[in-house]
Image: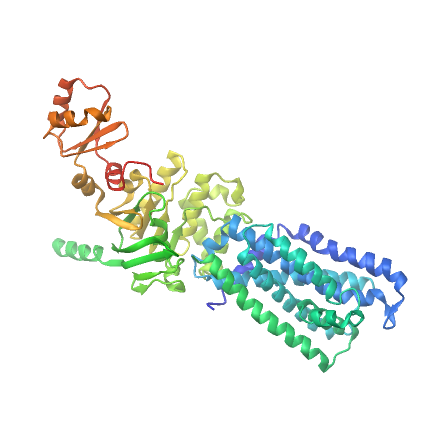
Length: 255
Length: 318
């Protein structure tokens, strides 16, 4: 792995180009999660009574928030990166400079994670306006860290998909068959313990499950050593995805 | 003293800064570059000529460390080229074949961002960008988006971008493909002025005129191999002669015609509807032809294009 501080330069390039897309991306990254909050949280929540002594919205927010991080990071490394490689040949000129292919890919992963952080933060602001707050002010930096890490993980996973994608249509397989189901099986909308046992086991293999569990603990203030398993799972998955994503992508870029 | 200066100058000029030893590139079964060896001297313009798919671009991509070498080696300024060699990339400027400018950024942002990739501090980058925009005569497009530029302008920005790091080596991969004559000549002038500043230049092209305009030495590549190497004018002399006479006539008459005109030509070739006669002095040949009263005869100086077509075949390559 030929990584260097030049990751930052690639991140910076994305930041400079982002200022022209900032408003449309705000709308896009807020649209879907807001839709879930309103329909499920406020609409359906009215019929659902209380979850652990609090309105349903309090159950829903931590999951939807971390899912919006997942979505933003995923889409950035699918469509964003694909356009840069295939349509704009941006990586071709990058790798001809002292920026290595690994730097370039890691820079895009870091950028996607940042996009996830922005989405998550916007959601957090809305949630706070609706009266759903993290357990304490000290939980806030932990939540930011969780969002960054969740972004890195899903950006890296998306990078693996992009590394083998022949065209845009290919991404639908990943988003429709993996990302969307994950959204429903990771305990975002209802507690996992209501699933049959085999489904609970299955859910443990979904990275989003662990991110949601940690997010919910930070909102509820239920910090315990039981969370270590989720942290370990995220770290292991994240590291593997990051390394594989960069290696696969390098293979595509350097021929 | 003058003599000594000459010798020193001559010696410097002959220092080889890039040398390839049986450089090879394989893509699976396909051998794109087949064990070629060459050396390029400091300050010269070295051209790779060849039809599409000859291996020119693959060769230069291995030189500037963006394509892994399958076998053999190439050293650039004393260092072995390889995919992880950032030091070579740092002193090389690349003018790519495809327009790889950043469409999301303005002209100015494109150059500033690129300068960052080379660790150039911001204040210095600003100065260089201003100077380079003047060099390619595009100061007035500073704040334009890339999509608003013509192809010629985009190519000039690519040149400016390739110069940001004050490169010792510039690689221009078909830098004038698809340009109108004005834009092409402007780019040639800029490349020549860079050469005057002592930069070593590698050019790939399929335009013979471009090679004649710019290159001190060329190699003709075909199917991954080097067919010929030399100084453009000398190559024309040695391979073709000074002049070419083209006769458009059907092939049946060739044997009789060639016998009649012998030994006034030094070589001949038939391609499609045309018989090519090569010669060093066409005076006598033309006189004889006039007496034959042949229609459709064209008499012209020999060019690199004749060498190229003779070496790689006059029929369409596919």
